[in-house]
Length: 101
Image (cartoon, rainbow, N blue to C red; front, side, top):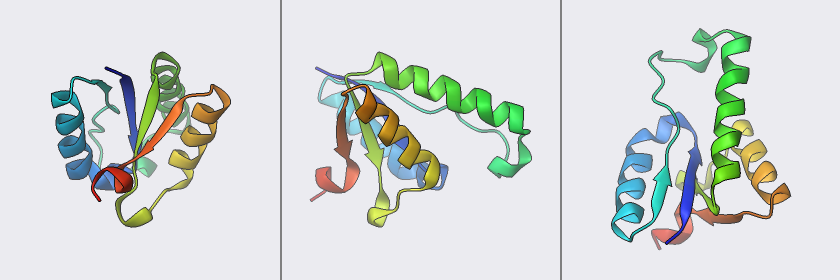
């Protein structure tokens, strides 16, 4: 069993939910991003965005690994920074595209 934080673009919400369920059924403890209530990240203030980012990085700290939901190989800037942060903490990086092969 591993504790994993799910990382990726909110536009891949469906895939995040599906892979989180699959990995939980393999007896992994899955930590997910918060559900945003607004349509666009731009609808949040800069201060709110900083809080979301800080809290997500705290989740990464608690994890053994991160699971990057990189549909069609897409990794946005926020996710890139989460990957770099996880690497700096020597966390395992698992990619969605590797799991669905």
